[in-house]
Length: 287
Image (cartoon, rainbow, N blue to C red; front, side, top):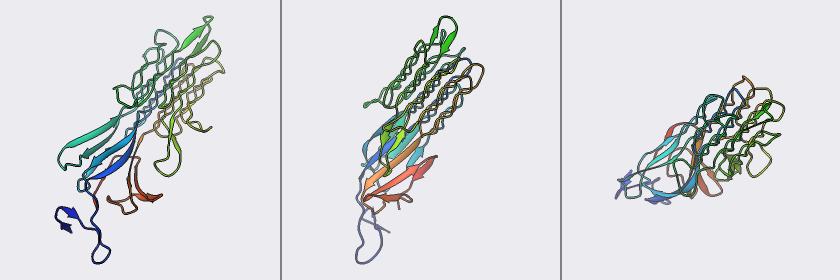
């Protein structure tokens, strides 16, 4: 029932009035960019990674959009937390930008949450991350590709949330930029690593990693297609020869507030906090 503008949880002794407005912590990760295809494509950029706190109206429905990962040669999609501010009327949204696609032999890489890595030829330049600009930064730039001795071709690594993508060298395609770890769900998870660049030989770039040895971005192709990204928001690996680039991984949105009493439908309790995890579009509905 409703009492003086607040939803009352339960009846009788022990009933409590939930706080309103409520301060929530958010993690918004956009979809990772796809790796560049033929030939010797750049790695896809990791999806934008944004975290922070915001005061919202606990009596209003909040809308969640989770960005899809980009297919080969395509950028990832944005993730959005659209909410009603604590005053109960002002609409506020927080957006993380999709990761930029990796470049291929006919298309330049694209900027994004983190930028895509460049191809080896005229499209060799990696593109900017943190596009559009946010503070703190939501990502980093992709690395440049390279051709050496007119016969060895290497793509640049896609940017990651934690570091820029690596430039290709005379013997190795660029590595994907490292992702960033978050423990908002109760476990440390790496998000938004960049994809490794593709190579004409056996020297594809590795995918970007986060705070441990788990690969997050897809590895660059070594005479094969780029591999798909492994963790949410990470970019796909660039391809080799005439193969296809790897697919970026879809993003996620996680909302957390203090206290084990959940103010919204669904969710789970982690360490005394209420956590709501979205891996697809949905709504955060008041109880």
